[in-house]
Amino acid sequence: MSDKTDVKKFQVPQEEIEKQKEFTALANSVLTAKYPDRTPLAMVHTYGCQGNVSDGERIKGMLEKCGYGFTDDVNEADLVLYNTCAIREHAEDRIYGNVGALKNIKKEKPDMIIALCGCMMQQEKVSEKIKKSYPYVNLVFGTHVIHKLPELLYNVLSKSKRVFSSPESDGVIAENVPVRRDGNIKGWLPIMYGCNNFCSYCIVPYVRGRERSREPEDIIKEAKELIAAGCKDITLLGQNVNSYGKTLDRDINFAKLLKMINDLPGDFIIRFMTSHPKDCTEELLDTMAQCEKVARHFHLPFQSGNNRVLKEMNRGYTKEKYLSLVEYARKVMPDISLTSDIIVGFPGETYEEFKDTLDLVEKAKFTSLYTFIFSSRDGTKAAKMPDPVSREEKGKWFKELCDLQESIAGKRTALMKGKSYRVLCEGYAKEGIYNGRTGGNVMIEFPDTDGGKSIGKFCTVKVTEPLTWIVRGELEE
Ligand code: SAH
Ligand code: SF4
Ligand code: F3S
Image 1 (tube, rainbow, N blue to C red):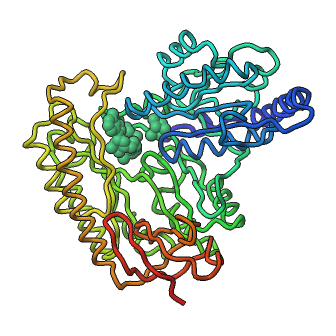
Image 2 (cartoon, rainbow, N blue to C red; image 1 turned 90 degrees about the vertical axis):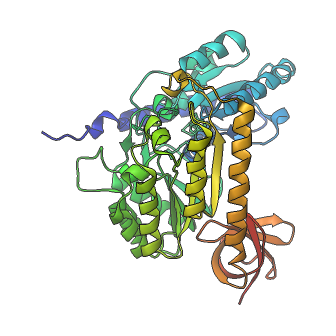
Image 3 (tube, rainbow, N blue to C red; image 1 turned 180 degrees about the vertical axis):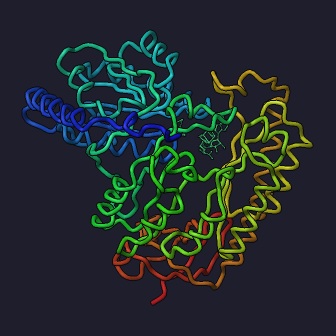
């Protein structure tokens, strides 16, 4: 007996995807009749992580096939769709604010369709609240039925009824869904979905279902498509890429997948996120070191530097294990740039314990940090834990952490002065000034001295003026 989860359980049958094509054609004909003289416009806004951004690209792909064009101006939109995030309370409040603001616009334009999807909408209590308190919202759908958007939209368009669909599910893998990418220089490539880790503070496992990996062939096919379309910077996505392959009944893991993508022909760089320290192996770090296309950047969230807090968070590693990974990564890749995520003020955390986080930050010498104050999420274990420290006090700790990291980042970028880096020019920061990132993920700005020719190309840039979070430089021949 195999202990692997049956992959077929997650795969959406291709007949279902074909059926959605029929709904796409139906939605298209309703829209053509409704807007005979013009292309209807959709405004799609995505919040949250890159996984959600990637979903947003598929949502736009399906809407485009249904016949929509796109706009960023809510006043000219015929369909407004918010692809939401539930990670922190602030993210949710923002959505309620934005949806509330649509009420008056909808009064002026009663034909406008308002749709909400993403992680917030996968929570029953949210979808109920929208049903009751926001009667002008037409369509709500959860994270497991994104591929059914053509059908859901057709039902809204043809039946003039509100549609709510956020079924409970362990999750799906839907291949061959149309995609409309936000740009062609950088590309998001999901390799797995969902999460099984249940860190005690985190809502993701509840709204994204169980961990499931895409078949390597499907990933490689999409990677090849990206490269053929001119993509130079591919980011592999998953909540815990280090456990890639665990649900597949075959001999594959993340290190092997990375090598397979590295071996594809073409000049591009590979990034990935997110890595979980508990599943990070020396094999992975060795593979990174050997793969010339893998960026020398490692995002390895540690959340807290205190072992009791880490245990309460259910993270499955200690401060010592984390630091030994950092040490090994630096041994095999001396130029590696490390970044991390931290939560300040986890329930019950004391100032003494928080000082262990400061100590870890001091020791690991990160390039940059994503820092968050704990936000209680209904349904998670941490939401039930006593949380005696005031928000104000947590704010002070947070500032102490940010100040420390600022001084470390400043020192790190200062060391870049005079050195040259291979940089992918991504476009303009402002008129006449290019922007890009070093392999280590440091933002770099440099004057356009070649009339736009560098955009979408790798160039050599010499750092002239290091600031704290970004550096300025100049193009070298
Ligand atoms: N899968 C990734 C993290 C995804 S969420 C990982 O395990 O590293 C991105 C970040 O949001 C987390 O790393 C964490 O720092 C933060 N976060 C998640 N839940 C949070 C909460 N309830 N309050 C505050 N920050 C939170
Ligand atoms: Fe959330 Fe933890 Fe899963 Fe990351 S690994 S998504 S923090 S539960
Ligand atoms: Fe937010 Fe969902 Fe991503 S909760 S961080 S959009 S997985």
